[in-house]
Image 1 (tube, rainbow, N blue to C red):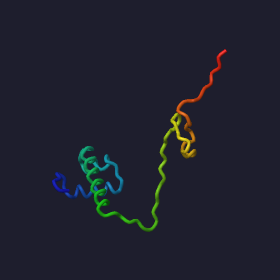
Image 2: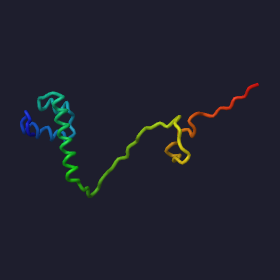
Image 3: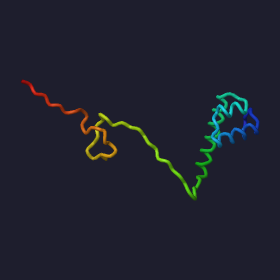
Image 4: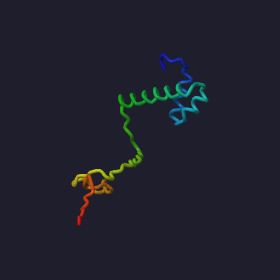
Length: 105
């Protein structure tokens, strides 16, 4: 909040909106500044939180929930080594090009 043109109360309200997952459009309309200003402020808040976590890591306790991430990746037509896990590369080919046999008469 140092060297800011905005008052401390606006910063406090904006940080509360950020922690409540309010959209930038809602925050800018409520506090009366542009979308770009809201974006820049959100970036500063998130970078400050990241710096705080890097300096003093948080130890979670109690019940912690993690969600899995699904990454859509297509291996069709890509070369896959023989030792690769077949469950991961189920749609991939083992050779870079299909082997075709031609007969001439």
